[in-house]
Image 1: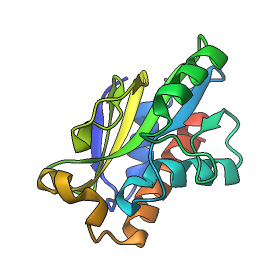
Image 2: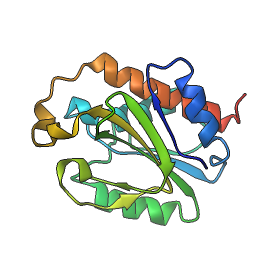
Image 3: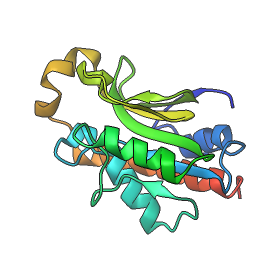
Length: 171
């Protein structure tokens, strides 16, 4: 799989991400969404999880608004996922801080949960998708950032459409 980075606002962004992901996703893949709805900038994961469930994605989705994976439970949840879904490929999704705000980055590798706020928890994923929601200088005040819900929603929607596109192999 070739890594890709695209602005969520770019026309066809979902298709660019989906094309890069489609050869990775199969019936032995799970989507693991990291984040909490307690901090708007960190809710892309659980919002995406709820969207994917609502859209009827035919592969397992873990981490939703009703059952999120966050700093308080990630070590336990990730161990549980590895046990229940041994042998599955994992697409891990999270929001992050970075230089290119508004971009969605996808590459091979894992997500280090909590890295954006200088915390170190469990790692998860064979492929990661990160949505850059704010600048790196915002790490210390991340929970207080004024981030618009429509921005988070639209980034989540692009990722959801990309995953659906990839799961249907570009149909």
